[in-house]
Every structure is written in C-alpha cells, then in structure tokens.
Length: 119
Image (cartoon, rainbow, N blue to C red; front, side, top):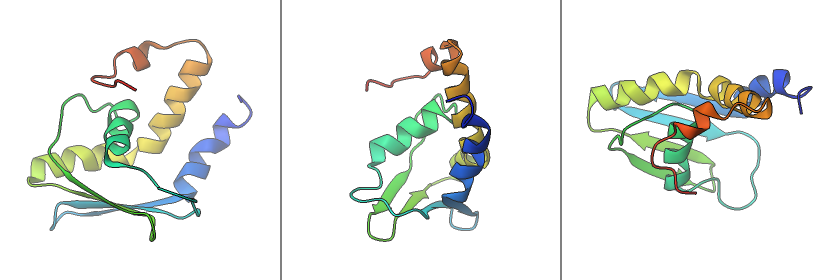
C-alpha cells in the first residue's frame, strides 16, 4: 500500500475533472474512467466532503448525478456556500490520500473527528 500512495494523488486527479462556475454557484465533477453501475449517490458526496474535505457543518446544496455521463453537479444558493465547497474541492484528492496515509500508519485522529457519519 505504501508504494502506491505517492502516485495515488495523481491517479485521482487524472481520473476526474473538477470545474467551478462562480456565476452560477455550481461545481461539476466529471469522472473520466468508466464506472459500471452508479457513480455515486448524494449521501456519498456529502460523506466525501466531510471525510476528505473536512466539512464540519451541513451546507445546503442540490446534488445531481448523471450515471450515463458520469457527471456530478453541486449547485448552491449562496456564494458563501459555493466558495466553501470550491475551496474543499481544490485539494480533495490530496486530502483523501493524506487521510489514507495517516490511517495506514495507525493514526485515526482525523477519522474520529468527522461529524455525522453513520456508515
């Protein structure tokens, strides 16, 4: 596992395109690698933002997932909410790998601090 971690960040970044539209308060995540079945469900996106992005509170957003095009759209009502999630998305894959690396070394402190994750 340790030998794959350094290249995992690049692999995750290469597998997705994340675009932000500040005029419409939208973030679009396009999954480039073909996934058989469902790409995700809205609850999984919220868990991802909390687990990997460090989101601590609920942020109102509409989450649209198109399994055919493999596009996930996050739509926000306010600029403040949009900017909060946009900042998280800038480093989401780096943070995900860092969390995995930390956990693989036996340090679960970041995982314990994730709010409202039941599964």
